[in-house]
Image (cartoon, rainbow, N blue to C red; front, side):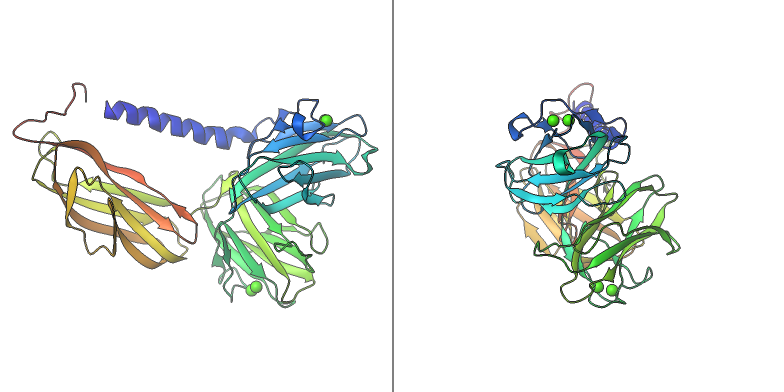
Length: 410
Ligand SMILES: [Ca+2]
Ligand SMILES: [Ca+2]
Ligand SMILES: [Ca+2]
Ligand SMILES: [Ca+2]
């Protein structure tokens, strides 16, 4: 039973992953009428939609989910394929459908851009596509939209070169405080991953003085792509680049003009339509099961738990590696000097996650009662505002000389 369910769940997870990543294929089409917030078409993160501003004066509303504070929106209107006009306007509205949260009619490479607009609540809100002046057509346009956790972290100087780059968080808050300041942020990538870089030039929403340039850097530190399409206080964007090989890449921010103490920005990468997290792998080995893979009430159950950070980049803590146990089934005999205890969990604390760090601990639990459960492993990271839990080693605890809970076909 357990393995069958596990298989089904694994398949579902794989399908969901495919749905998220495969969405880059043919964009869906808008459904008219969509001329008011009440008529808005639903739009989902990483699922581009194609439409037309046609006839002149047409406007197209799209409804998007709100994810609450701590999340942000990146939206790009690509009008480069239009045969009729290229003066697109992209507007983000609050849930009331009338309060403008952000508006852009400028240019990234292909049209207007809204980068890392902060969500204010969990209500649905709206994006609208129109033509500047409402007196021309755009046929066709593609609207791309991403809802992402911001997880913004402050830059740490010096970070002026590829070699001294900060390891990027999901997004970074930085400041180009002098004309010669450069801020670089490194990330670990895999061959074939698609990377975009977006920069919000006015994260305080009070008018930004700086005209920013963002660069995507190759593994050797050379400039792969550079974006400087818009003017002072305007967002910038580097479109999708497929990584040619596994390794460390970076994005860097500089200012063409307007450097100073208030030249702040919010920048980050979008990886395969999602947010950037470092790769972690887990392993939980139950090393002393009885033949037939079970334990008897009273047994000591020995485990080796291992977490590996698969990246040559370090990042700041606090970082907690957590073992999760079912306290109805097991009690702790040896927690391998865990720093913290919580109900059903114990943890080791790290001030920094170093390059390719491996945490490996030998722990001992006591089989308390007849049970089917699992000993799980996970981590939490403030830097990546994330906490995970992964199913580790499943176990069966029986009593006497037999396993009353084992089902046929298991
Ligand atoms: Ca339309
Ligand atoms: Ca319309
Ligand atoms: Ca800086
Ligand atoms: Ca710097």
